[in-house]
Image (cartoon, rainbow, N blue to C red; front, top):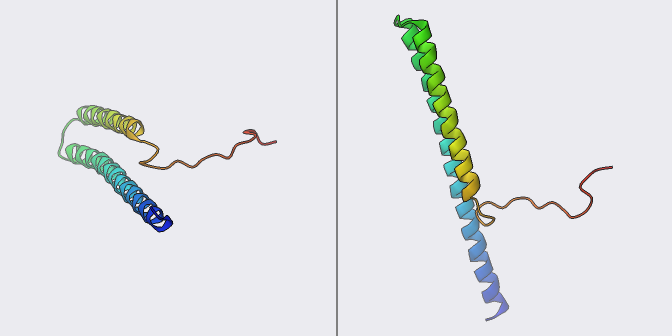
Length: 103
């Protein structure tokens, strides 16, 4: 195996990791957008229910319940992505060795 062969193999692996990282980044952004849209829909539906004459206390209770469910979903999703991350999937910046405290 020549140096050029090794270099080409390294370039293919690097491109593959970058494209996998870009796909994962896109998926995370799409999930975040879906959660934001869900929160907006909860607010809009609550406002429409109030305007249509439903009792305020019931609408507020429903909105709080939906908001709590959404927060739990977001938390579970965050934990899932933190557990699923491998060092190859999304590179983390490395801290230089040395004194950790400025001073």
